[in-house]
Length: 362
Image (cartoon, rainbow, N blue to C red; front, side, top):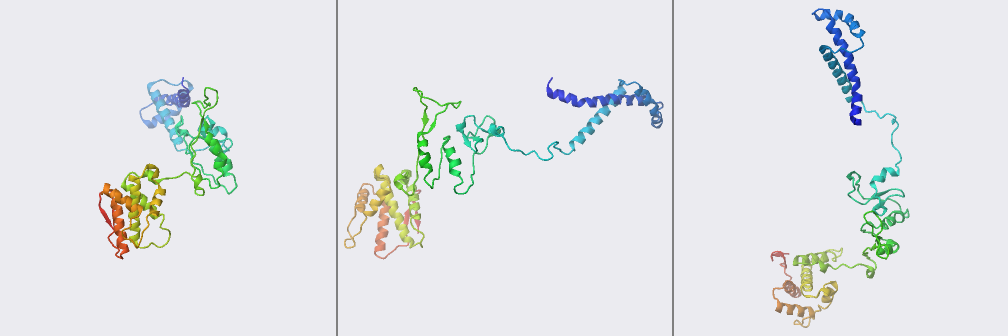
């Protein structure tokens, strides 16, 4: 028999016993003389002695009905009392808090040690977001608070780096983490099978999965990864985004000058970057080429017909493709520069929008 069913039967035995005993009350009432209820009550004490003289229950239909009614009333009274009863925690009146043990956190750990975040010497947390039991899935964010020299890097960051279970982005202001952990990451973590055992090659040597280490060093650029925005230009709209970002980050903190010069600078950068993107070889699409072009744009005030190398480049491109995006921007820049030289600064300087060739008036 199922233990749950057995438990329910045991819990309901008292109600059955009470019902069988109550059949004697039904028998006593049935044996009373007369029809009048008041007279029956007077003779009930005599018939009760007769009914309970026999300890066995009565199985007369009327007596059984009385027993069932009494048993149900008893059950209902116990149910209502239990439902409204206060919740007591017996034997834990002084609290149940205790120090956790390793068994408490064991369901949240991965059996393969390498696949865990190390929290303490004896506790860690699985990196998998999909454990066999979803109830054991937990957030992997960890906040370490401590003063300078308290061991945040030594006792938490480095051990978890050497776990090598995922990708990492590290802020290393002291340049110590790269020096002390770089070689280990360069070699990589051992390749593990589904059971967590190291995978070996045909010579019996463990296989390793090396990390690709990228360093962004703002002090010594020779030791830093480099970023080339030209690699992310795919349209004229991207050129304008790059020029806008370039001007916004090179104007300094001083008071802004005449907006005319900002617009002229925008036209010049747009023309030069457009030329580099569409015409220069891939290995020359960078800021070094842009600086060379800017440095070669010398002007001779005594010779109005003088053309610097950049002028010659755009002149040749104009002959080949008069409607070229870079050519249109350069022509507008030259017109604006000419107006500024003659003291006729125009308040209608237009920059072409690549979406639909409309113009924005400054």
